[in-house]
Amino acid sequence: MISYDGLYAQLKSKGITKTDLTVEIGISSRTIAKISKGEKLSQKTLQKIADYLGCDSNDLCRSISDNALLQMLRDEKENKISGGLYHELQVLMTYNSNHIEGSRLTEDQTRRIFETNTIDVGDGLPVDDILETVHHFRAIDYVIDTAEEVLSEEIVKHLHYILKRDTKDSTLNWFAVGDYKRRANMVGGRETAKPKDVPIRMKSLLGEYNTKKEATIDDVIALHAEFEYIHPFQDGNGRVGRLIVLKECLHHNIIPFIVEDSKKHFYYRGLSEWRSEKGWLTDTCLAGQDTFIRLLDMLDIPHQ
Image (cartoon, rainbow, N blue to C red; front, side, top):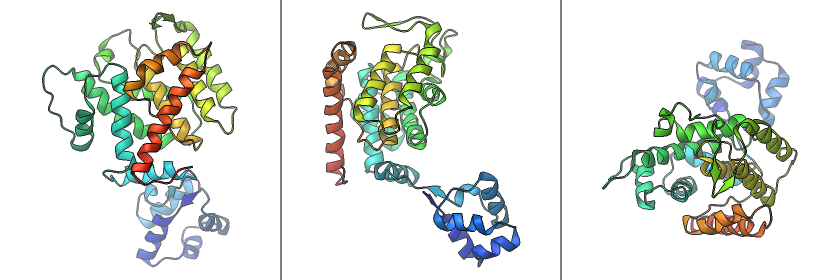
């Protein structure tokens, strides 16, 4: 649904009615009806109205999600609300996801970067740990912004770009930031998809997944596991994979899960044994969903 509160505010401040728009700029009564019903207008029409009112088209309307959790995250993000769900999700997911991959930043240091954009670096903290923490905050923002879009290779690659740009890896001429890997790699002694096979396997994985109109938590977990088996990027696959999980949970109105660093050994075992035993990974992800539910309860946010 589209909210036209911004448009109504502009009209009221200028003493203009919706009917006046049909006369002054030739907007049809059908378009006026769409505004009244909260239906989407074309960007061309929005820009025409904005030009007439002397404002930015982005100020006229905003999308309202049917997913109350997603809408809360968007509202808190837009209004820079401190101490709410958006704030805590940023800190907890960024800390845990980065720490699973070897970051040395503590949860307190992660929180300080998010809240104050400063850090007491202490002794010998790698610059990339700090950069990738800031980048992960921006990647979560991107996930919230694109949550209702169909998962695509473009979105997946852009998540990788956000995470890895400006890092030491980006200076390596063979490291493809925001694109699939150029060199074969392994994870936990297990062979992953060869570079030449990644595009077709990713296309197949996303194509099959996107046929599901209403994905379940099991579908999202399976998507995550198969993504990690492909391991499409040179590095950053775990973090990108968990960001995809967040996006798809928000897309399908599923309570997200946060894999805690303390559970990483169960998580790795679950991924390693996924093809033969799905229970390990499923149980770990469901425990991560309980972590998110506890966060909702602490913030007194209703949930299903």
